[in-house]
Length: 68
Image 1 (tube, rainbow, N blue to C red):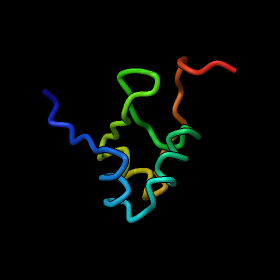
Image 2: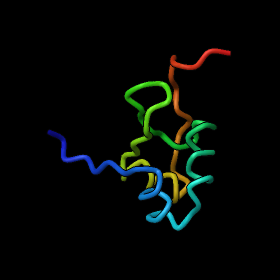
Image 3: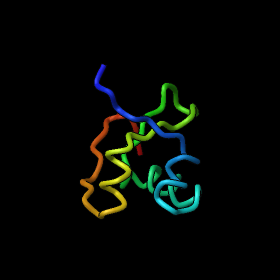
Image 4: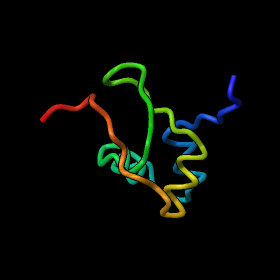
């Protein structure tokens, strides 16, 4: 195990002192990295990725999952 701390959207919002809607928007815009087990599943966010996003140290997320 890597010891990664995974956060829910609510936990991420509390930690970032932001609204849940802001977190969901960042996930949708792919400016915040997150993971879902299935397409409409619950989001899980790595605490380190959230901290980087809050600092503005994020890189665009490159995925092949979405289609236009």
